[in-house]
Length: 133
Image (cartoon, rainbow, N blue to C red):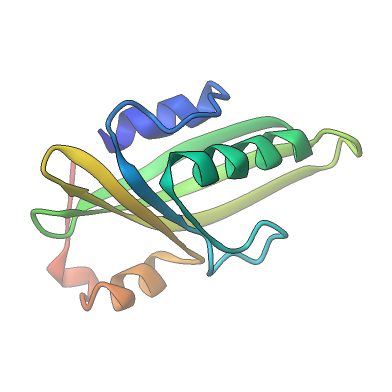
């Protein structure tokens, strides 16, 4: 489900994926960007995505690592490449998110600036997590 969500974003889809719960939460409060905040529910998440895609002409979110933290949480380490719509400036970054999956639905995603920050927030060290192949 997490991979489908990322693929959806890479296709430029503005709505939360079909696997998302109605009250899906996108927590971007750790972001250093202008859209920093917490977005709850399909309407707010859709508005966030609209604002995001208004600013960026190109977005490629490449998964570098996907780790099962426990039965409900997945850590994604990714490299993002974006090109500004107005400026044409290219931005590249590496970041992490912790996705929560419960009852067969994506419940939330929280962004972190690094893998170690995400693992610390989850109460784990690098030795406690297992990467998916």
